[in-house]
Length: 95
Image 1 (cartoon, one colour):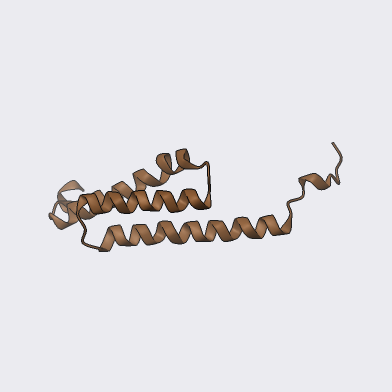
Image 2 (cartoon, one colour; image 1 turned 120 degrees about the vertical axis):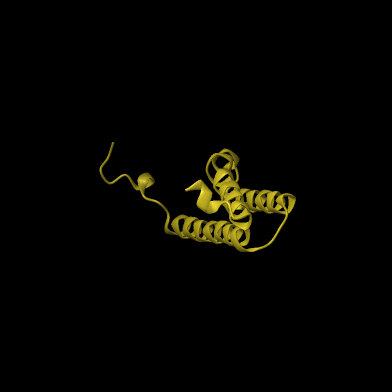
């Protein structure tokens, strides 16, 4: 292996594109979390929001469905569940 191997150096355009996609990804997920925390919606509406978020994430990051299903979906479902408990006045009884 050569110390100055140019193939290991990332292309600046690729880095910029990756940064743009990650920023957009954060925005999409943050928006979904905000809506789940603050919007009044039924459980089915929340599930549709989560599925729509998944589709948007996969459009930005094809092939990452497993990562979404393992990391982001449980987080979004937990936020929805916590808001529902708060609406029912059950948050304090859980702590």
